[in-house]
Amino acid sequence: MDRRATSRAIALVAAVVLVAGGCGGLTGPVSSIPDGSASTAGAATAVPASRGRPTQPPPTPVPGFEDWQVINPQGVRISVDSAGLSLDLIGPLLWFNEQRGVLFYRDFTGDFRATATVRTWKASDPSAPPGQDGTIQLAGLMARTEIPAENYVFIVSGSIGMSTGLETKTTTSSRSIYVQRGLPTGGNAELRLCRVGPTFELSWRHTDSSEAWTLMSTFERRDMPQTLEVGANIYTDSVPDIVARFEHLTVEPLAPGRPC
Image (tube, rainbow, N blue to C red; front, side, top):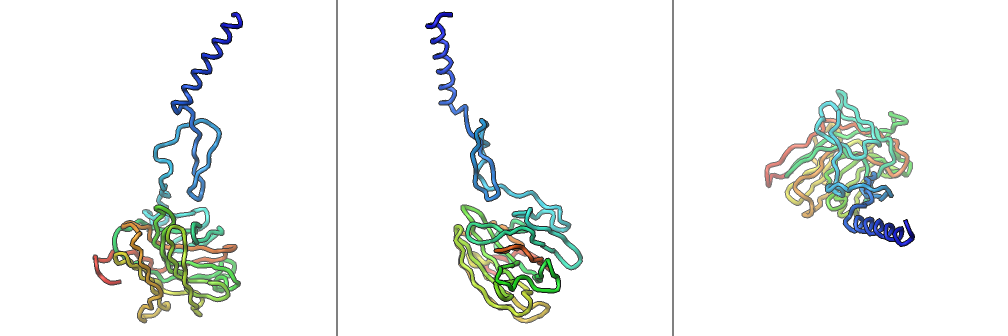
């Protein structure tokens, strides 16, 4: 083959490659990473049409909670016994702004009342309350959605720094606002989280008592969808050293307009 024929062959191959590229035949893959964002790689592959939508964790094998799911399952050990549901935090995971801690939840649509007696202690010393060393080590009840970003409300108990206490938090589009108060009972409390329309009421009372509920925070969240992830959360801002037991954990529907 002479030089002119060789040049024509090379030009033809180049034209075919250019057309294939212009028709979308070469696409870099998008792979999920833990925080739900995406990273690109160099290999050529097709991108599924569902890519970019929130993916649901698989149902859990926890007895009695088979239809529940877990956010950040690698950061927690979950067990159930006659005393209740236990969450043992083993990863440094935090619920704040866009950061995600652990949430053990079920989907719930409409108004609801979630309640549990929450008892917390150090994993390293079960006879001692968590933290009280400047760290946050907390667990409680949460209602959440990740559309279009982190949106949730919760009430938790445990260590709020140098003392045991309670915290409520509302996060709108990954921006968090929280309120804390002391609780000199080892960080144990009976917690309640209610949704009545756009209003979320977060209340507490001492464990093993029949006293009236104390309303700690009310959050108006008209942005929240009808269906939310509702359940038990746990987190820390430091090295995890907290176990939380949820006794009598329930999520029950409220008739429209019915008070908490």
